[in-house]
Length: 109
Length: 116
View (cartoon, rainbow over the protein chains, first blue to last red):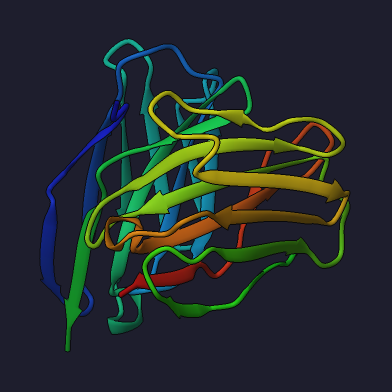
Protein backbone atom coordinates (compact mmCIF):
# COMPACT_ATOMS: atom_id res chain seq x y z
CA UNK A 1 0.00 0.00 0.00
CA UNK A 2 1.13 3.53 -0.63
CA UNK A 3 2.67 5.06 2.44
CA UNK A 4 2.99 8.61 1.31
CA UNK A 5 0.64 10.97 -0.34
CA UNK A 6 2.01 14.04 -2.00
CA UNK A 7 0.38 17.22 -3.02
CA UNK A 8 0.02 18.81 -5.32
CA UNK A 9 0.11 16.05 -7.92
CA UNK A 10 1.23 18.59 -10.47
CA UNK A 11 2.69 22.06 -10.12
CA UNK A 12 3.49 24.58 -12.82
CA UNK A 13 5.44 27.72 -11.99
CA UNK A 14 7.56 30.39 -13.65
CA UNK A 15 11.31 30.38 -13.49
CA UNK A 16 12.52 32.24 -10.43
CA UNK A 17 9.49 31.38 -8.32
CA UNK A 18 9.58 29.05 -5.36
CA UNK A 19 8.03 25.58 -5.48
CA UNK A 20 6.62 23.84 -2.43
CA UNK A 21 5.66 20.19 -2.34
CA UNK A 22 4.10 18.38 0.59
CA UNK A 23 4.22 14.78 1.68
CA UNK A 24 2.17 12.97 4.30
CA UNK A 25 2.79 9.50 5.65
CA UNK A 26 1.11 7.09 8.01
CA UNK A 27 3.55 5.10 10.11
CA UNK A 28 6.58 5.88 12.26
CA UNK A 29 9.81 6.38 10.33
CA UNK A 30 13.56 6.45 10.78
CA UNK A 31 14.03 9.15 8.20
CA UNK A 32 12.36 10.75 5.22
CA UNK A 33 14.08 11.32 1.91
CA UNK A 34 13.30 13.32 -1.19
CA UNK A 35 14.18 12.14 -4.67
CA UNK A 36 14.00 13.64 -8.09
CA UNK A 37 13.22 11.75 -11.29
CA UNK A 38 13.50 13.09 -14.79
CA UNK A 39 11.10 11.53 -17.27
CA UNK A 40 11.96 7.90 -17.96
CA UNK A 41 15.11 8.02 -15.87
CA UNK A 42 16.34 6.76 -12.53
CA UNK A 43 16.06 8.53 -9.22
CA UNK A 44 18.45 11.09 -7.85
CA UNK A 45 18.72 11.44 -4.09
CA UNK A 46 18.19 15.04 -3.00
CA UNK A 47 18.13 15.18 0.75
CA UNK A 48 17.56 13.05 3.83
CA UNK A 49 16.04 14.29 7.07
CA UNK A 50 16.10 12.16 10.17
CA UNK A 51 13.12 11.69 12.43
CA UNK A 52 14.73 13.81 15.15
CA UNK A 53 15.37 16.72 12.78
CA UNK A 54 12.88 19.42 11.95
CA UNK A 55 14.52 21.28 9.12
CA UNK A 56 17.37 20.78 6.71
CA UNK A 57 18.91 22.82 3.93
CA UNK A 58 20.91 21.88 0.88
CA UNK A 59 21.63 24.57 -1.66
CA UNK A 60 18.27 25.79 -2.98
CA UNK A 61 16.43 23.01 -1.18
CA UNK A 62 14.77 23.29 2.18
CA UNK A 63 13.06 20.32 3.79
CA UNK A 64 10.91 20.33 6.89
CA UNK A 65 9.64 17.39 8.89
CA UNK A 66 6.80 17.38 11.40
CA UNK A 67 6.60 13.94 12.95
CA UNK A 68 3.57 14.89 15.05
CA UNK A 69 1.64 15.59 11.87
CA UNK A 70 3.47 12.91 9.88
CA UNK A 71 4.22 15.37 7.15
CA UNK A 72 7.15 16.87 5.29
CA UNK A 73 7.62 19.64 2.80
CA UNK A 74 10.20 20.31 0.12
CA UNK A 75 10.84 23.88 -0.91
CA UNK A 76 12.84 24.68 -4.02
CA UNK A 77 13.79 28.34 -4.10
CA UNK A 78 14.52 30.40 -7.20
CA UNK A 79 13.42 27.61 -9.48
CA UNK A 80 15.01 26.99 -12.86
CA UNK A 81 13.72 25.31 -15.99
CA UNK A 82 16.17 22.48 -15.26
CA UNK A 83 14.25 21.74 -12.05
CA UNK A 84 11.41 20.36 -14.17
CA UNK A 85 11.00 16.75 -13.00
CA UNK A 86 8.95 14.53 -10.73
CA UNK A 87 9.71 14.70 -7.05
CA UNK A 88 9.06 11.86 -4.64
CA UNK A 89 9.23 11.64 -0.91
CA UNK A 90 10.17 8.29 0.58
CA UNK A 91 9.98 7.14 4.16
CA UNK A 92 12.56 4.72 5.46
CA UNK A 93 11.82 2.09 8.02
CA UNK A 94 13.77 -1.11 8.50
CA UNK A 95 16.01 -0.30 5.51
CA UNK A 96 12.99 -0.22 3.21
CA UNK A 97 11.84 2.83 1.33
CA UNK A 98 8.17 3.52 0.71
CA UNK A 99 7.57 6.14 -1.90
CA UNK A 100 4.91 8.79 -2.09
CA UNK A 101 2.75 9.39 -5.10
CA UNK A 102 4.98 12.14 -6.44
CA UNK A 103 4.62 15.72 -7.60
CA UNK A 104 5.26 16.61 -11.23
CA UNK A 105 6.92 20.00 -11.30
CA UNK A 106 7.11 22.06 -14.44
CA UNK A 107 9.16 25.24 -14.43
CA UNK A 108 8.46 27.46 -17.40
CA UNK A 109 10.72 30.12 -18.82
CA UNK B 1 29.01 9.51 -5.34
CA UNK B 2 28.13 5.84 -5.64
CA UNK B 3 27.12 4.65 -9.10
CA UNK B 4 24.63 1.94 -9.94
CA UNK B 5 24.15 0.71 -13.48
CA UNK B 6 21.42 -1.33 -15.08
CA UNK B 7 21.51 -3.36 -18.24
CA UNK B 8 19.76 -3.28 -20.57
CA UNK B 9 18.22 0.17 -20.52
CA UNK B 10 15.44 -0.94 -22.84
CA UNK B 11 14.27 -4.38 -23.87
CA UNK B 12 11.44 -5.64 -26.02
CA UNK B 13 10.50 -9.29 -25.79
CA UNK B 14 7.71 -11.52 -26.97
CA UNK B 15 5.05 -13.01 -24.72
CA UNK B 16 6.16 -16.23 -23.13
CA UNK B 17 9.87 -15.49 -23.18
CA UNK B 18 12.06 -14.61 -20.24
CA UNK B 19 14.22 -11.55 -19.85
CA UNK B 20 17.04 -10.83 -17.44
CA UNK B 21 17.87 -7.39 -16.06
CA UNK B 22 21.20 -6.74 -14.37
CA UNK B 23 21.91 -4.27 -11.59
CA UNK B 24 25.51 -3.48 -10.72
CA UNK B 25 27.10 -1.31 -8.08
CA UNK B 26 30.15 0.04 -9.87
CA UNK B 27 32.29 1.54 -7.14
CA UNK B 28 31.06 0.02 -3.92
CA UNK B 29 29.95 -3.27 -2.51
CA UNK B 30 26.27 -3.68 -1.80
CA UNK B 31 25.12 -6.48 0.44
CA UNK B 32 21.56 -5.35 -0.14
CA UNK B 33 19.88 -4.32 -3.35
CA UNK B 34 16.25 -3.52 -4.02
CA UNK B 35 14.04 -3.98 -7.06
CA UNK B 36 11.21 -1.59 -7.80
CA UNK B 37 8.56 -1.40 -10.45
CA UNK B 38 7.11 1.82 -11.75
CA UNK B 39 4.03 2.27 -13.94
CA UNK B 40 3.71 5.37 -16.13
CA UNK B 41 3.29 8.54 -14.08
CA UNK B 42 3.06 6.47 -10.92
CA UNK B 43 5.21 5.96 -7.89
CA UNK B 44 7.80 3.25 -7.32
CA UNK B 45 6.57 0.02 -5.82
CA UNK B 46 9.06 -2.14 -3.96
CA UNK B 47 9.04 -5.65 -5.37
CA UNK B 48 11.77 -7.39 -3.41
CA UNK B 49 14.86 -7.03 -1.31
CA UNK B 50 17.90 -8.84 -2.63
CA UNK B 51 20.57 -9.93 -0.16
CA UNK B 52 23.93 -11.24 -1.29
CA UNK B 53 24.25 -14.95 -0.74
CA UNK B 54 20.69 -15.53 0.41
CA UNK B 55 17.19 -15.72 -0.96
CA UNK B 56 15.39 -12.55 -1.86
CA UNK B 57 12.55 -11.27 0.28
CA UNK B 58 9.48 -10.48 -1.77
CA UNK B 59 6.80 -7.95 -0.97
CA UNK B 60 3.23 -9.05 -0.59
CA UNK B 61 1.57 -9.69 -3.91
CA UNK B 62 4.79 -10.15 -5.88
CA UNK B 63 5.14 -13.60 -7.41
CA UNK B 64 8.59 -14.97 -6.61
CA UNK B 65 8.35 -17.60 -9.34
CA UNK B 66 7.52 -14.90 -11.84
CA UNK B 67 10.23 -12.48 -10.82
CA UNK B 68 13.39 -14.43 -10.06
CA UNK B 69 16.06 -12.52 -8.19
CA UNK B 70 19.66 -13.60 -7.79
CA UNK B 71 22.28 -11.68 -5.84
CA UNK B 72 25.35 -13.72 -6.62
CA UNK B 73 28.00 -11.18 -5.69
CA UNK B 74 28.43 -7.99 -3.72
CA UNK B 75 28.16 -5.94 -6.89
CA UNK B 76 25.55 -7.73 -8.97
CA UNK B 77 21.88 -8.55 -8.62
CA UNK B 78 19.71 -9.84 -11.44
CA UNK B 79 15.97 -9.80 -11.97
CA UNK B 80 14.56 -12.34 -14.41
CA UNK B 81 11.00 -11.87 -15.59
CA UNK B 82 9.90 -15.36 -16.53
CA UNK B 83 7.25 -16.18 -19.11
CA UNK B 84 6.64 -12.50 -19.66
CA UNK B 85 3.22 -11.16 -20.56
CA UNK B 86 2.17 -7.71 -21.78
CA UNK B 87 1.03 -6.78 -18.27
CA UNK B 88 4.64 -7.18 -17.13
CA UNK B 89 5.57 -4.22 -19.32
CA UNK B 90 6.88 -1.59 -16.96
CA UNK B 91 9.88 0.42 -15.83
CA UNK B 92 12.06 -1.61 -13.49
CA UNK B 93 14.51 0.20 -11.23
CA UNK B 94 17.07 -1.24 -8.88
CA UNK B 95 18.87 0.40 -6.01
CA UNK B 96 21.85 -0.55 -3.90
CA UNK B 97 22.27 0.14 -0.23
CA UNK B 98 25.54 1.59 0.95
CA UNK B 99 26.88 0.49 4.25
CA UNK B 100 27.71 2.59 7.25
CA UNK B 101 25.75 4.93 9.45
CA UNK B 102 24.37 7.10 6.70
CA UNK B 103 21.62 5.06 5.15
CA UNK B 104 21.31 5.84 1.48
CA UNK B 105 20.07 3.96 -1.51
CA UNK B 106 21.61 4.69 -4.89
CA UNK B 107 19.35 4.06 -7.81
CA UNK B 108 20.09 2.66 -11.21
CA UNK B 109 18.85 4.42 -14.36
CA UNK B 110 16.05 1.91 -14.86
CA UNK B 111 15.10 -0.63 -17.51
CA UNK B 112 12.10 -0.17 -19.76
CA UNK B 113 10.55 -3.57 -20.47
CA UNK B 114 8.00 -3.92 -23.24
CA UNK B 115 6.36 -7.29 -23.78
CA UNK B 116 4.61 -7.69 -27.12
